[in-house]
Length: 332
Image (tube, rainbow, N blue to C red):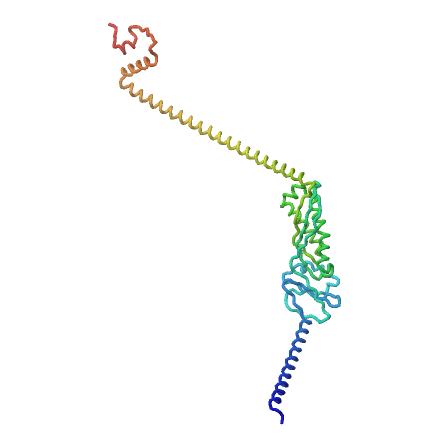
């Protein structure tokens, strides 16, 4: 008779084996589904754009919803790009496994930095500059057809940006290149517009170009420094001249105003004095009219006070009014 324990263990083992096989089958099915799903789909992230091709023939282009470059330059969609479907959006897309090729490109701004280069301004001063640019792949289909990858595009941009900046600097004098940033930026904007007219045929859009670093060559350092000092002195002299001119204007205006005030004050003083004299004379006349004899006596006193001192000798007739007024002497 068989051992009951052995029978039970064998039954449990068979049951566990069946469960394991079932789990393995489902795992294999899920794995196969996952592999098939990944082989038949692809995703386009927020910073990506895609060119889909089959056997070297372009089929679809997936770009961001805000891409207006393709709409504005549909003339670039010709040749093998003529029948390409343009899809604006991100997310999950389907493809044919092993046939469809998915080529992804960055949709963000990319940075180009040049090697240091020696250039001359219009005054033949030499500078060592480094240029940089911010650019993007605006049409991935045209970009893939003309450039292929970012390394090739960097060389392509280098061959265009460098001559554009060199031509710009060659047209500027030393003062404008070093100090006049407004003029320099205006020139760079013109160069940027011209550059975009060229690179759009490669599916590229340049957002900005700038001179990243400027280093003066040692041989020109002292002469440039002396010229900058001379320019600063010229500006200082101009400021001083303008300040002196304003000072002289202020002094002349103040002097003119003082003369006007002084003349008006003299005029008022004379007028007031005249009015006072007239009033005094009127008072005197009124007073003299009250007592003519007193007036005659008072005038005599004034004449003596103003005409006689301790060395004065008077020779008067005995009938002179002074004797009569002062001494009360009257000839019998």
